[in-house]
Amino acid sequence: MTAGYVDPNALNIAHGDLSKRKKVQERASLQRFSIGLNNTTNSIKQSIRWQRVKWDLVKLYPNIIFDKNNNPNRSPTPEEVALAYKNDLSDYAFVMFLPTYSATGKLAPPDSNYNVSGGPFVFPDHKFGIKFDHQHGIVEMIWKANQYRHYKLLTSPYLL
Image (tube, rainbow, N blue to C red; front, side, top):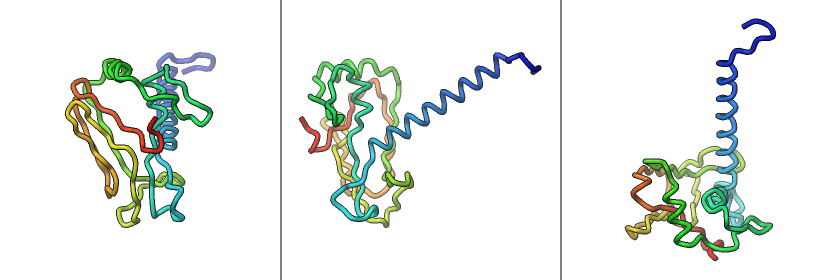
């Protein structure tokens, strides 16, 4: 490359890196808002609480209004859930639930006596759900996303 000349391939690489960096920042922001400490305990090691992911609600249901505290004014209707499911273009879905400390982002080891609480992850057509209360370890799941409706229920303080 000579001075004054910009290689188009270099621009594509730089743009790709910027895109990757933005995805990483978005995921970090999502993680920060989706995982939080339980305010009823005094120790970071005593309890970790999973909170609802507001980002997903905004992306999936853009017509739901959020108040100044980022709480939705209503739950999505079955039609909105079906539409969001229909627009999911991925063949497979993968999810990993793992307890981390929100202050450091580090994994919480099983011997730290953490306690995960929150709404279950459900497959409503099969009347099947997974509660993560008192789970100790990493949970990974993969399934055909375009064949099974799925979502995470809100934790009880957020139910509308």
